[in-house]
Length: 222
Image (cartoon, rainbow, N blue to C red; front, side, top):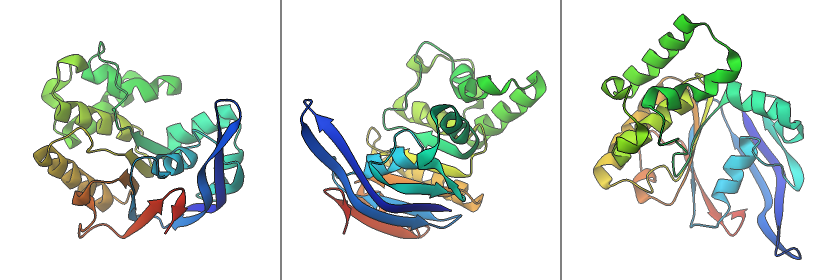
């Protein structure tokens, strides 16, 4: 389902110095797999996720998702691709604290112009899935860290995406909440989602439902 072919990614630092974030990455992920990208901060894990989500483009090489060369998509088509295919769980959640749980979750649906019933049906599905129905009207700023994470995961699933990408999803959670998140991942995998987790949290490395773990070090798969 996902292929990265001979990917390099370079950034310009201070206008002159070139930083090579990725160096000849080749990676393939099958439909329905749960894959972990393991590595220290700055190793290139997050860059790989951003390329798969078409949030950035490779310097060389190509990214193919479900037969489509997403690394070549223009910005408007990249936005459509993300809306229809990708659910992204960000490390810092990227929620809007002054909006309610409901308002944060339905944000990705706004460009689609769904009718009210369809909107409510989708919202109810993810609220129930992640056990936050009772928090629907609360402002996000008044939620605990674990509750905010569940809102972020619900938002990532509101479009029923084929692919879930999660960037350091347990970085701000204690062990109990991290284990709860892992159980939510198990459920998503059972639903047939293709999942890629970028993390250095050892809780992920020996799970019985993780298909493969890739070690990323200084921009390379080792």
